[in-house]
Structure formats: structure tokens, C-alpha cells
Image (tube, rainbow, N blue to C red; front, side, top):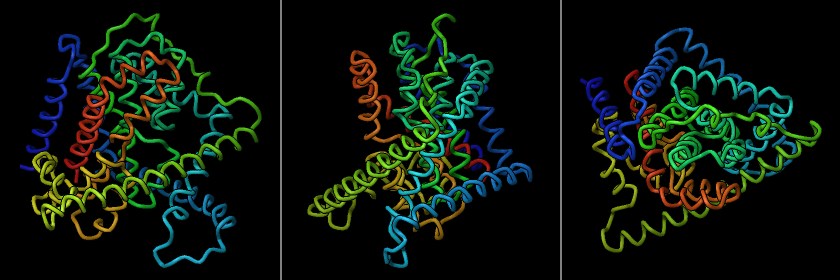
Length: 395
């Protein structure tokens, strides 16, 4: 029965995307079907086979080792601070972003990441029939942030019509940066965070390809991997990576201060009228119907819906901080579904980030992004729900 509900949820999610489509006749149903099958195979492999579980454990162990290396640098700088038993979020979690951003910059300078991204994108394009630029951007978005992924295809922006612009923007919003994954792993179960990376990548381009189908000439579909490269020396790459990571850590910290403070203000205002009611509870009731179909047990769906709603109106870090204490008290299925849903940049703030990045590349196209901003958020949220539903089938 639960599997049937999950299948129904997948159908509803894809159906909503179909209703939102601006060119229903040109939807690449073959590509959509292939990507859905790939998602099911990835999740089945990772969660139900010994080899898959070993792969997840191996990747998790690798990240944990990298986190240990990063902590050596953190301890050297702030090791003298006396903190409480629960630690300090900025020190324990956010400062790790600096190390991972530096590592990504070095791997890019050494030309290890660019060909991987290019050929993975090419493979996805060949299998699904999607354009190479969009496929490349989807893979690139898994490794780099929203801004960096879009900047990497800046030389192709003059080829992008509104539909193609929607797809690359949705990919940037639907994935997460590898530089931030280490921080996520400190808060939520690693196996669900890691499986969310490929699933959300495919979900983002699936939903976006339904909402904004593309049909282009091959000569307008060229990937320039040089835009991902890092110039200068390896030491310059390290320095730039560290500075970029520090900027991201400070931005996340600033957003958390703002969003959590504003959330408390909104809750205070709500409780002046409705005593005992919070914005999170309201969001929980709104999201509960789709949460039930996704596979969340009915006794946990309001709490889970509240977390998912919080992520949409604030950001994933705020939601993860609220979800973290719940992990030990709710079912494994709910933990998996909610974790995968949270592991993306699908929130209101991302509309501004994407629009701002595009404005720096092409001001005319930035106006288009702003016009379909809410549609962009809706599509990215549907993508997160699709990934979470697929994970729920195997839990």
C-alpha cells in the first residue's frame, strides 16, 4: 500500500509539472522516463545491496576523513576557545566550508574535476537526449554553488532562450554545492545526504524539462569546460578557494541570524492572534497531504511538514537545525525522506541568488529569471519532493 501511495505521489508531482509546462507537445518523455528509472536504480542499489551500502559507507568514511583534516585547521585557529557541551555551530559546522571550498578549488586547478563534470554531463546528455549545456550544468551544480555553476556556462548564455535559462537556473537551485556537503554531514545522516546529491540532480532537470522543454540545434549546444578552470598557481587556487569558502560561511551565518530571528518575530506576531500556533505548524498542515503520499507516517507528518515548509520559506540550514534534534525520536523512513528533501537550495532566498548571478552575466536575461522566479521555486520544490518520495519507496 505504501509503495502504491509513493507511485501516486510521483504521478502527482510529475502531473503538476506537466500542468505548469509552457510547451506540452515538446516534452522529452523518453528522457524523463530514463532519468526516473536511473533514480530508482541508484536508490535501490545504494539502500538494498551490500555493494551499494559499502559504496555509501566508503564515501561517508572519505568525507569523515576530510572533515578530520578540516578540523585540524579549525582547531589551530579557534582551539583556545572554551565552548559548551553542544559546541558552537559556526565553529563546528560552518568553518568546515572553508576547507571543502579550498579542496574543490585545488581539484579544479589540477584539472581533475572539469573533465569529470564534462564527461558525466555528456553521458547524461547522450542517454537522455537532453542538451549538453543543460546536462553539464546539472552535474556542475552538484560540485559548485549556484553562482559558480551558472558562471561556468556564461559563454553559452547568448544561446539560452527562456526555456533553457529556466532549466539551468532550476538545476542550480535544485542541487547543492559539494563545499557545503561536509556541513550537512555534521547535522544529518550521511547516507541520505549523499544519495540526495545524484537524485536531486536528476529530479531538478526532469521537472525543469517538463515545465520548460527544449528543442535546439546541435551547433548551439557546445560546452566550454575552460570556464570551469582556475588560473594562476596552485597556491593562488588554494587562497581563492579559502577566501570563497570563508565568504560562503559568513553568508550562511548571516542568513541564519536573519532568518531565525525573523522566524521568531513572525511566530510572535502569529501568537498574538492564535495562541500556541507557529508558522512551522501552519506549514506542516499545508504540506501534510503530499507528505502522507511521500510515505511519511501519519503520526509524524505534521512535524515533518513543518520542517519541509521551514526550508522553503527560510533555507535548508535553518530547517536542518530544527530537524536535527528530531532525528533520534522519529522513524527512519521520515528521517530519510525529510533529509533528502532538505538537501537542496530550493528556497525563496535562492531566487535572488540565481537572479543576481544571471544579472552579472546578462542583465536582459536576469529580468526573465525574476519573472519566472516563483515558477522556478515551485519546480525546484517539486524536484526535492520527487527525490524524497523515491527514497521513501526503499525505506
